[in-house]
Amino acid sequence: MLTNVYVDGFNLYYGCLKGTPHRWLDLDALTRRLLPGDHIHRIRYFTARVISRPDDPDLLNRQDFYLRALATIPNLTVHLGRFQVHTVRMRLANPVSGGPASAQVIKVEEKGSDVNIATYLLADAFREDCQTSVVITNDADLAEPIRLLCHELKHPVGIVNPHAAHKRSLGLAAAQPTFFKQIRPAVLRACQFPEKLQDGDGEIRRPQEW
Image (cartoon, rainbow, N blue to C red; front, side):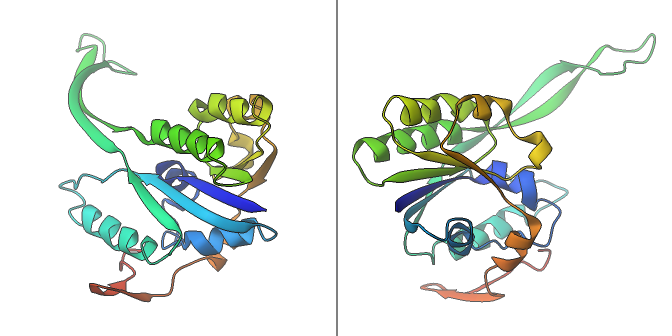
């Protein structure tokens, strides 16, 4: 089965990688482990360039190392959205009696990744670039393109959930994908890049914090 895999990078990170020792994740190894009977034709990884923070000045460097590691996978492409940072006033959850009811906060939003995933998911199916599509996400915003592909175009789409099973999106379940799979810690542990990799610019090392 010729299969394309679409990876929602931030959903994957916040679902099963943040705070774990498994962030140096080899997506080629992961997809082959999750889909052992399929021929992985293409992996599309969707993310946005992070913005360094005063409390974490190396954040962007760590992402650079990881994107370079991913670029060593021949059939993987990276598709970038963007971060939008703005100041907004929001209500306080527990305002102090007699104090202000709201505060100004810095709001950081990722923009573009869900639209990009939906666009490539539909475009690849329309041009018959694969026989099956697999989306690594738990984002209900992708339910409608998945439903359309599965039930109107009769193109199989599987969902791989990176979040805990009890947090599986009801919206995605309502789209009735062809199958659901769950990412488990043992699989993540078995699918890590080597500590050192090589590309055209030299050596790539796993970030020390990871």
